Length: 152
Image (cartoon, rainbow, N blue to C red; front, side, top):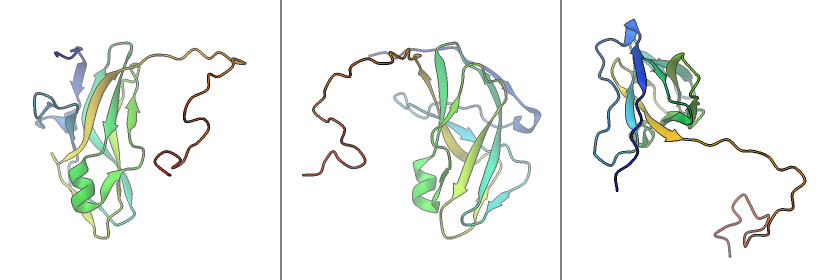
């Protein structure tokens, strides 16, 4: 089944010039790699977090968001992830996209220029309209949460 395609305007900051633009690695990939637009290597000590620039600004169409998600390979091999995963880029945001990395590993981790540091997923969104005071329909789950499902 073909998926929806949306056109997203993109601008590259001077410190992002020369880096590959985000692209899908495979035909069915959900995310595109974001790369580090650092001018010098940035070392993250264990427990340290850093805001890493991508050199990209985008203009999403109304009704869409971009989710900035961690890369599983960085988490597995180095214990590096994102503090706010996923990060959300709203359709009306025009600033540079940054990735808030954290080193949860036990060794320093170096971010080099051009390293793939996160994924970007563009997705449709809808706005909720609250109905205060409405009776909630019962469900089979009820009010069980925080590990409730799957327990016997």
